[in-house]
Length: 136
Image (tube, rainbow, N blue to C red; front, side):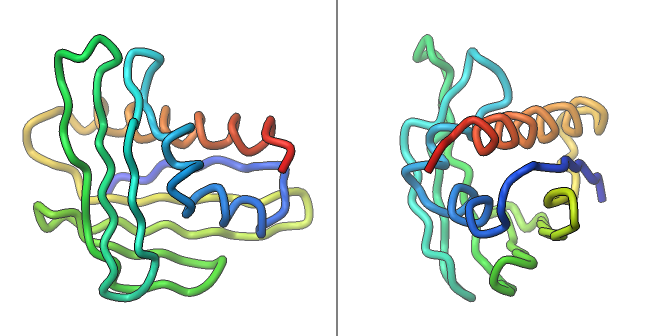
């Protein structure tokens, strides 16, 4: 598994909401400024499914990122399987000085692991920036 992480200066309630609500997912879920997530749906329950459209902003490439939840512990852990069978574990660790998010995932075989780690870390960094600059 590959792991990425960040520490966010915000309440766990805010972090959980912005991580799981589709109207927020579409605002932070991108690996670079050339990509965006124009559509997201999320049925956050065991056996529930999520589906995001990830697309280049120039409109030349798009794909669905989707999966099924197998474990949800409210504001603590989310485990899901991507449609290709890879497993993802997201841990929310509340600490005195913020919340650490650890996200571990099975790598795919098409791209180098370092490239995959950089992409997932970039998305997590975008999430951190979105949370810390969103005043809801």
